[in-house]
Image 1 (cartoon, rainbow, N blue to C red):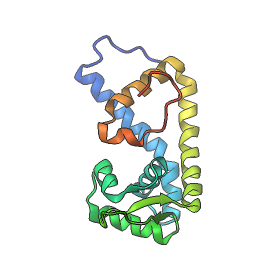
Image 2 (tube, rainbow, N blue to C red):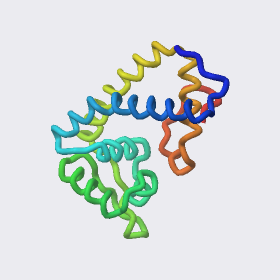
Image 3 (cartoon, rainbow, N blue to C red):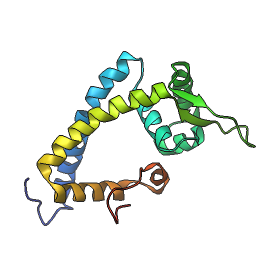
Length: 162
């Protein structure tokens, strides 16, 4: 692994980090995008499945906050995913505007397929970088997650990690 300059907060280092981030993201999502497109789904649909699976009974309102989408736009995704049997809508509580969502078995199977593709790529990169680099990478990502996203994080396997 290339050594990091002690001036790691310089614009040049931040620019390189951004390019690395986006190029890595493309590599992580590309295989899944093909599988999503085969099912007439998009990346946003994958994210909805991922976060509903992580936090069952989450609402469209909570997802709009997390994903930065309008309620109307997100509702179109949810309606299509319900029609495909990937999500179900639970009973509404006292607030009739709240629609608790759950992932179905079919949705969970699709999600597992997509996540396994991404884990394969991460496992390859993590194996090449080593445990110390992985710890640093996870630490940076954890610090980038805003408070509204923290409830959607799975439990950590490492003590002291957020």
